[in-house]
Length: 309
Image 1 (cartoon, rainbow, N blue to C red):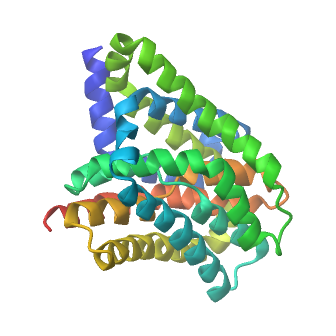
Image 2 (image 1 turned 90 degrees about the vertical axis):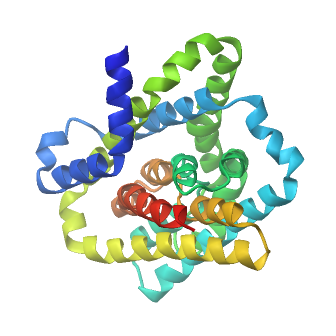
């Protein structure tokens, strides 16, 4: 068990490097990982969300009631800044419909699961980050389909009800199940969470490998453009989240949490939704996959930078 705990810590520490290496392998040698099918994406994301649920306790949500203003500010920022940025970037770079819907999906998804770790590394308000992630995830079944329809509905056909059901199935149900198990089998979960980074990273890596290998030829033709859009989306999210926090006179630790929570998206969910609901647009899965790789790298760099502030 100790071996797996050490391995889990090592994998968690070098997650960005591992994801980048696997993405490069999938891009240049797709046959090497072609056994991981895109049809596995929903199941893999469910595993990640289940792991997130195992780490949550009732007290993690106390902040929602004890500091509602902070959580509301964070969630409003999450579901306004990133969708608007995504929409503006698709217009500025004149992205074709299948890429545009992928970028917009990334923007309309809730905060990423690794944002809590990055907030900790940045010496930010971890409790606020956890609260924001939890609330934005709960709101996602309603807001993600609605915002996707608002910003992409005139370009592609968006079925809000089907998206709602998908998010409930692959996000809400696994998290709720994880919370229930954590509540009634806490002795087991306290041991299990020590190896969760290993399981979560493996699932995220598999998602990236599946999507990138299945679309490697198309990525080679538009990869640079998508990379530029993803980097701008992510970095502008950090910057605008931080500026908003300062403008509302939040203290530095809260500004760090809001900035990271806004900038880091649940790109795995975006990839899952693209593969499930926009299968007629194969490239729609690419922005989510690229974002998965990039935001773990940028998040670590941004957290280290902010830790000194």
